[in-house]
Each structure stands twice: as C-alpha cells, then as structure tokens.
Image (cartoon, rainbow, N blue to C red):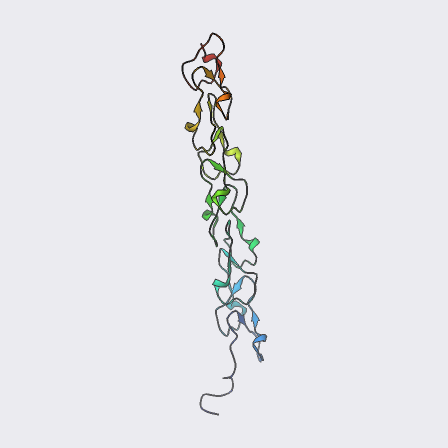
Length: 212
C-alpha cells in the first residue's frame, strides 16, 4: 500500500441531505435522509442536527433535501412565519380584505390590502381583481374592508349609481324640486318630488319640510 492510502480512505461520505450516526455502514442506502421540513448541504454529516429547518415562507413534504432552495415556497395568497413546515396547509391564508400575488411570503404584513371602494370576505386571495366593488349607493374610504358591511351608505338627499366609490363626495345630490330621506339610494328615481304647491331651489334636500 502506498503512502497515504491506508485503511479508511475508501469510506465514502453520506451525501447532502443525509447523515449517519452509526459505524460500519456498508453503502449510501445506510445513510438516513433529513426529514420533511428540513435540508442539509453538508457532506458526511454524522448527526441529524446537521439537518436545518426550511425557513419562513417555505415548507417541504419531501425527505433528503440538499439545499434550502429545494424547500417549496408558500403559494400566492399565503404566508408563513415559522420554521420546518412540512405541508402547504402550514402556510397561513391572507385574511379577508387582503390578497397576495407573490410566493414565499414570510409575514402577514406582506399581504396587500384591497383598495378603498372595495371589500373582500374570502381568505387566501391571489389577485386584486378578487376584491369586490362596493355597490351603487355606497362608498368606502378605507382599504382592507373585510365585508360589504364596511361599505358606507350615501346619506339622505343623495344617491349614487356607480360602484367602487371611495368618498361620500362621490354621492350625487338630489336635484332642485326634490328630497330624499333614506340611505344608500342607487338612483335619482329615489329622490321624491316636492308636493303640489311647494318648491325647492337647492339640491341635496334630506327632508320634505325643506320644500316651501
């Protein structure tokens, strides 16, 4: 035997994603695989501690991963703050009124809010197009409304035929000669004409008593 070629030089290292705690292993199949939710880039690892948890925003349901890039990112509409997750269901859904187009989000704050004038009751949405517009007769000045109840009603003397409005100033006023006592009216036909013998030259009248 030549110099430097003593016994043990033919021992192969367990590959990345694997480890071995025992002695006298005969082949690579005797090396144990890092479990789901973990990976290891180390060659010749001799302890399970060499297996590192997949980071936030990721998970893995497979064994023997050799790099963190092998961990799967959480899907759009989800985020994940923990370590070592083993299934996509471990990724939390962005809540009502929010959505996420990106993958591998690591915290809830990365979920985007549905804009003003919209709302959304579902969870885990992937696209802003999933946010619903507040309907006619309504407006919503704030983002991330979790239900249509967050849409505010145009007040008395007003109506609105459009959708997705963000301010009460977008509500139209009932015209001269009419009034309107209700909330959330969707058209000018909801404005009531002043009675016979009465008139009203202004706009946005909320009470019939304003007709003279």
